Length: 109
Image (cartoon, rainbow, N blue to C red; front, side):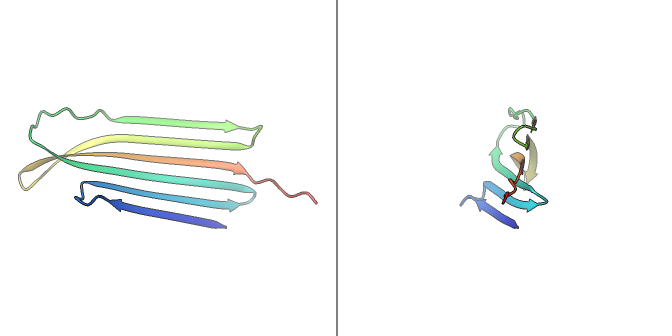
């Protein structure tokens, strides 16, 4: 069995975009849940010497043998500058990936 969910949301002024997907799969006695998010915001800036946010990376991995669960989470934040038609823009973004693996209980008859 496989369930997919996909969302693509854009603000009315097109300066913020959120893309999200979720996938649930049951295979060989393991349920995997994978969630992905991408958020992007665009802001026009007047000064080239603006305060840009520092890049950030966060990774978490958990393994629980007693409950037969595994979890992985990764988040990346960053920013870039772009020039379009002589105007300076700051583009900030965040990616996240979350994976959960859980053993499916077997029915004993």
